[in-house]
Image (tube, helix red, strand yellow):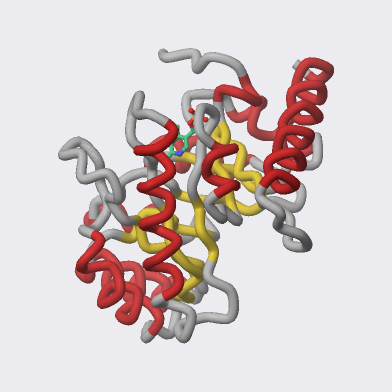
Length: 228
Ligand SMILES: *Cc1c(COP(=O)(O)O)cnc(C)c1O
């Protein structure tokens, strides 16, 4: 895997740079979260060893299976829908939860983080496409939820996350990302830098052009997922 992974990472970084240049944004680099869901722990470790410390996973069971054995500097991001009854299991294992989509979930993370003596970085997930299959709070509820997260003691509010629409045009996809950016503008009083986690393998360039500060990339870096 090593060589092809390095080549893919290099190609990804070049495309990120080009998208940044196109959108005329300087300075702040785009943070890459490598989404390793369905890949074995050895692959996750190889990604970390290759110099990508930000790892994204979307299922609690997989995090429980893989996280305890990892070594080296790393930062684990829960990017999938999180049920309140599983919060206690993930809080000790992850650093970021990008999928906070209800007040109930935020409160639960706060309680469990306090219990575990941890601080969790959080993003509020917004359903910007309105697709029923998507998790995330409604755009109209986002700011209130962001305020609630920002008021927590053991959860620190860092911004917003969204998943772009499936198989949509550039215009429709960018409208969703623009929607997230606009909500982010209204949250600027809540944290130093409002992160915008948007863009995956198929739409990260559009996301960067719309202001993404974090992209979540799986298949483009690791190839097609080996569904068990
Ligand atoms: C799987 C997943 C990704 C990565 O998807 P790719 O298309 O493989 O890049 C990003 N974000 C979330 C929330 C995911 O579930």
